[in-house]
Every structure is written in structure tokens, then in C-alpha cells.
Image (cartoon, rainbow, N blue to C red; front, side):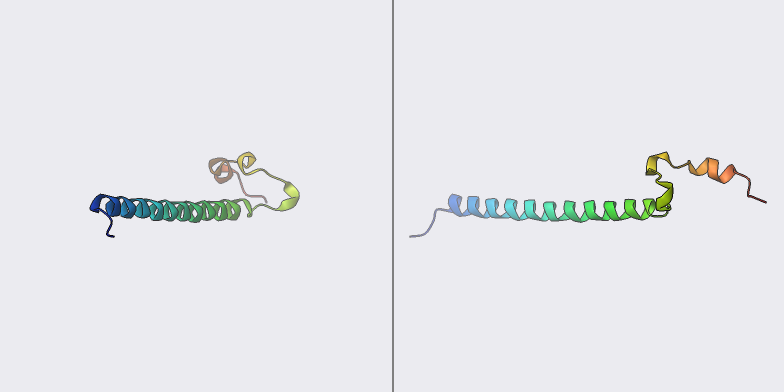
Length: 70
């Protein structure tokens, strides 16, 4: 027996919502991974023996104003 139009429409809407939700979760996971990789790349520029926290690093302006060693 055929389903009423409303039931089919509701099933289609539910399926699309689930697909959209899966797509958004996947996109968020990709964005999160990209942000982590970028942060690790920025942090990774510092030597490990200094044990600098990213937020403890000197601001760019103060490094730019520092005089070079002689």
C-alpha cells in the first residue's frame, strides 16, 4: 500500500536533516583539524628546550624592535 504524501515528505525531510547533520559534523571535524595543524605549526617553530608556551612568547612588535646582536 502506498504511503500518504505527508509521510513520504516527512521521511524525506528527516533523511535530509540527518545528511545535513552528518555533513556539518564532518566539516567541523575538518576545520578543527586544520586549526590544530596551524597552531602546531606556529608552536613548532620554537625549540623544545626553551619550553615556551605559545602565549608566553614575546610579541612580534617587541621582537621587531630588538637590536640585532653584534
